[in-house]
Length: 127
Image 1 (cartoon, rainbow, N blue to C red):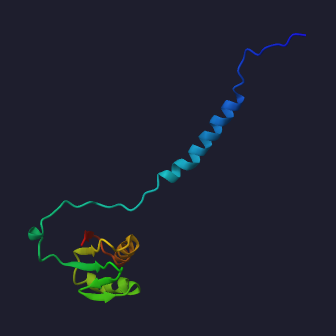
Image 2 (image 1 turned 90 degrees about the horizontal axis):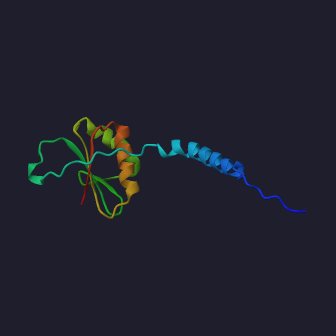
Image 3 (image 1 turned 45 degrees about the horizontal axis):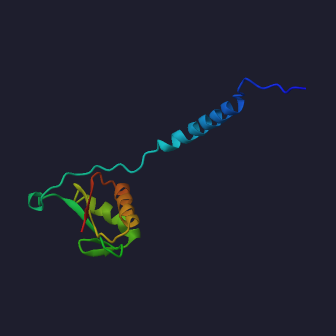
């Protein structure tokens, strides 16, 4: 008895693999489209040309992640009311002067509190 050879390729398993990959891509695609933090990078400006009359709230973030407003330490829990109080006197925005050794978390926390307080413009400078 002689064995018959198959002259056709069975593409059913290949089709199954492509369908599974298609489903995986359809599930993952919306996740990849999520937006993160939108930042606008300012142009470099010489210090001497900065308007000294600008009414900015200046917050220093020290290397040990403490917040200083007008050289007075402010606790993390007191940032929101303090910024709300100061925004009436200085409505132009917030300037964050962060130490290079401060953590990303402390700077982002300050940015979140400023947004919650109603600050529209936030600038960041590394000290």
